[in-house]
Image (cartoon, rainbow over all chains, first blue to last red; front, side, top):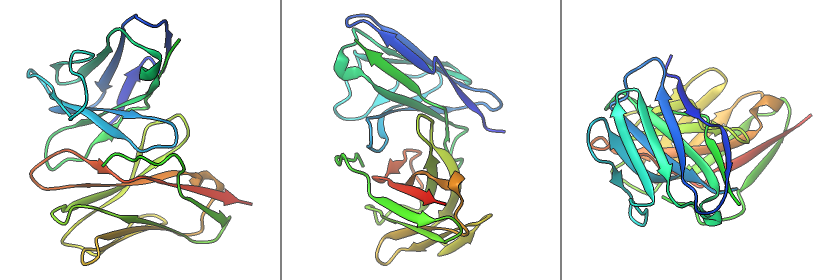
Length: 115
Length: 112
């Protein structure tokens, strides 16, 4: 149990376009979903926390107008990178939790490359 | 918190040996700790967790030790196998939040 999927696994886009990444909890209801960013050889950096039906809470330094997060249901959250630029190229990972004290279950990640 | 280093610490072990990966955590109020394994190009995979009211917990081939006095966490892997090669992260959280704070990570390389 506790499987989290992400789609797509890889995406290549041109600079200036927007990219949407989906995160789904397949066998449980996720009251909270998290979005992380990971650069090569670095740790995971939390970007934002989203609860179903409410606005996401962004970490300091993360532009909420650039990284749009929607958590419309208990099994789906989306991250849209708007007007992507090469510096947005990274590995984006989501995780889902059924709520405290439950742990987070991670998706397989999405590799974004902006040309 | 966020890692700023570009070079992960690396632990190289021979297949069959035991591995010990260490982690210093930052928040004395943290009461829940998790070890994750991340293979190249994949998301983190849960290995084992421990709460602050314990100092040791064992799983299959893995043991986590917690020393709250010096804010230190370790992961011991018995009889290390080539499939254990990955980057290992510790993560911490406090009881009143569901946010995880990740450590910088350690790369484990297993040689035959």
